[in-house]
Image 1: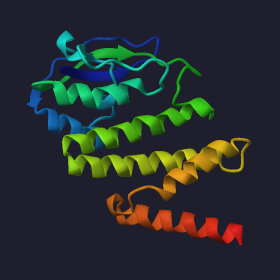
Image 2 (image 1 turned 120 degrees about the vertical axis):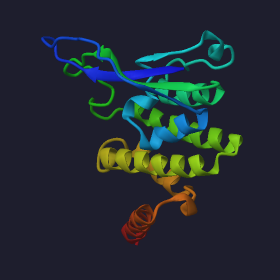
Image 3 (image 1 turned 90 degrees about the vertical axis):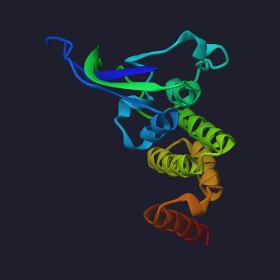
Length: 193
């Protein structure tokens, strides 16, 4: 897999590729970069793939965040990943044209399917450190969605999020996340009294 740098451009900007260096990383290091590297690491854009990687791994149809679902599996299967500093991929984002910037809809819950799959995948590979990072990321997604649906007409989704929060592996969370979870659970208990 070869990953180049992505640059968001305006319609009037000049799109001139830049030269740069590169680094070869192991599949495990690329997986670790999902949580510490540039956000483009988990996007399918700006990457070249050997076609043989897709013999058993496909992008799922109808799932938002399908690249986040698929890329960890592709990184894990690759022999090596080349990270290029050079800017070779330009994209333009039109107003109102983004899944990330649109208002809440039940389809946004797909990010939880992706996060749950990633935790399961890392566990199946025996990547304990990555699994822990994936749980923390999952918790962040739960918090983000909870804030978007709380006190809205999306009661079903709110209940689903709260149910998932009760099942989260407490030991994998950071200290700050444990405190947040405690506060959320205590508020829920007091609201039911």
